[in-house]
Length: 424
Ligand SMILES: NC(=O)c1ccc[n+]([C@@H]2O[C@H](COP(=O)([O-])OP(=O)(O)OC[C@H]3O[C@@H](n4cnc5c(N)ncnc54)[C@H](O)[C@@H]3O)[C@@H](O)[C@H]2O)c1
Image (spheres, rainbow, N blue to C red):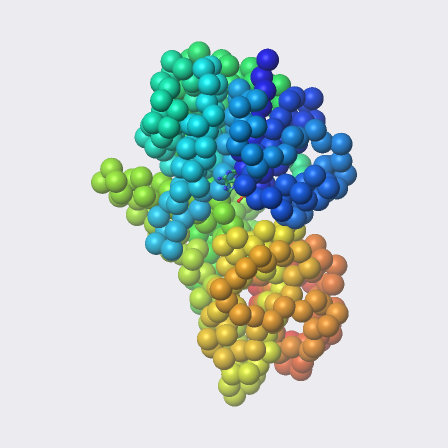
């Protein structure tokens, strides 16, 4: 009998615990955030990732008491793995969790890490810590595996229960145990790999692949702009070839694609292996907002003698379409860069949840927003689509500009001919 405990009830952990609960499994949901626990007890997810209806009737035993973990024998770890200010992996919370688990481990317990880490982290860091605190031997007394998570918030079509799930164990026997356990709540295919390192590496590669390809599109956009050629049109034309990959330019933020490459870079550096392409892609994507800010200035300069004190609104603060998550959102870079250039910057986003932020900015809802000299569409939320190009133009002063990064209105007809529209 498996008795599950999910450690960390953020975006990933909550979905995992719900999948277990939905499949009638015993599940403890452990998190140190008391507020989060009380909200979940009232069927409210402050991340707005799961709805009240999706939470209703769940049987997750919510707790912040680590002693309760002793009632479990299969632990799934879903703790955040950011980078620090120097872009170095910060696994400090995962290490705390290893110590917590080490203090409750018993014979035959299984721990599966799902957090994204560099290849080798589970065996080099987490297992020794678990052994040290528990005084038990991994592979003899307790067993460890790894299964990366692939959920994409905002994408309801792909969930934990219907997306192929990679699983790995420290040995073949552990893999079998993990396979049986995951089959209890993952309805789709389980993809077994031969070792933990390969599973860790697969997850990081998935995100690096996206980062590198988007960087290529962003770099290409800067060249097309100089040539006065529409990147959207180039993409449409190139996309008619059977093997052209449909990547688009855009802002790369969030806690996965903009972070995970640094985990691999860090590991490779320790092994004295160069990762020039991965590094360059990161640099291109981090600097893309600078290109956007300069584009706004150079275009507005053709209409206004100086840009200082012009009003510009950034539409979209979350890191991507239709989600509330603002972690590592590049919209904040845009705010800083445009403020530095002298613009009066306002932000508008009906979804974005901002818990705390080091930069100052004004946030208004669409109704209260006064007329602006420019809009930068940073995120293609459906709400902005609904406002439409006509609605946005109504809020533009004469000779204003719309800079549409996702190309939301690329094919729309402008209702006024004094407006400058630019999209990738
Ligand atoms: N969010 C995603 O879309 C996504 C997708 C795929 C993979 N991942 C990966 O999954 C992992 C988890 O990401 P997330 O977005 O769910 O993180 P998150 O920050 O949303 O959630 C982490 C949770 O852990 C809790 N926590 C912090 N310290 C704790 C402790 N000592 N003990 C117990 N709980 C503690 C926090 O309160 C929080 O609720 C990361 O490695 C991430 O890269 C995330």
